[in-house]
Image 1 (spheres, rainbow, N blue to C red):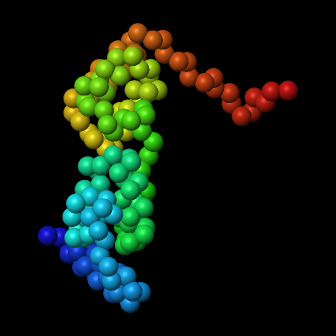
Image 2: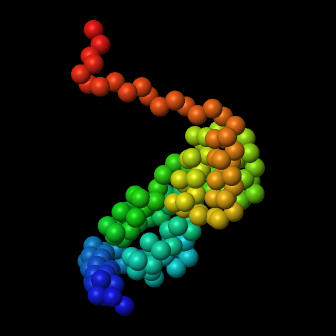
Length: 161
């Protein structure tokens, strides 16, 4: 364990203790029910453990986690990670698609969609077979479609009348 890990652990433990004391003094003595908790075991996880588990969930579930976290714990580190993790899916319902379904979509996708899928897949699921297919589809589009010309260069001194 590095010094940084030890400091993080100590701070997250101290923050969790302070939050539980604040809830107790505010009269929030009822623990959250399983129906309210975003995923099983959520309340028993510290900040780092919650952040590690966020990548396992869809955008819809991350929205639920964020709403719950804001209403109950308000851990700044978790909310910051959620802010980073939340984003638009490249296709509607993308998180529910299997790798095979994504690869089928790639067969007819344009370059912009392929780039969006690549960025989203790298950030979230990081499925090797999907990323390989993304690279293959991108290479295929680059060789079959003409390249877009770069914008023309105009020096700032060449002002148009």
